[in-house]
Length: 216
Image (cartoon, rainbow, N blue to C red; front, side, top):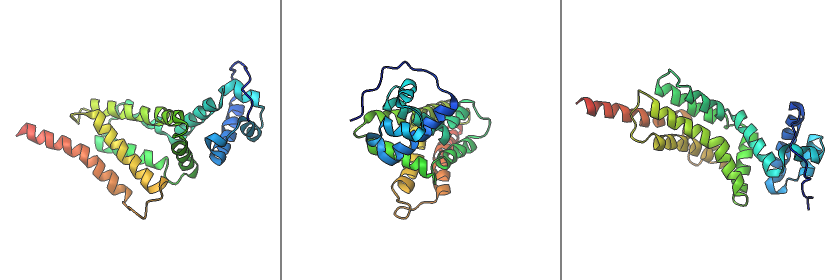
């Protein structure tokens, strides 16, 4: 059984050493799963001492959360959220299409990210904090930014922007899950562009219908 973490104070590490730890942790977590990963294995993979990891990340959960935050940055979902909050001048059709494609492009075909998401989903039953952390880091910022955008967009007058945002993200994530995570592309095939086109049309058509009724 792995020894209890030493009571070292948290200290800052160089970017190079931090990157080495996160790279080593990525390999071990993806190979062994969350439960099977030990700080000893991570330290060996990263080429650092175990106390060095504890002094910076505190424990395995802290290390995994840092790894998850890094993965979200690589997925560019954080960039998507920031872009939405900057009130882009493009039409809603363009903005929503860019968001959907960016979300899908960041995951589809990327084995490391697909494996990582499978790891979170598979382990969240035994370790609920992992699932909660993924929602906190990956889902919440984009959902909140999209809700803010749909609320503030002068071209749209949605009755419930928060629900519209969940419908939008839920559809994109469901497509990714069934086509990639669950290997269902040949079972329930659907062209990606067709999905994105119809999803955007549902939101924009509501605005058009509402405007037509209001003007009649």
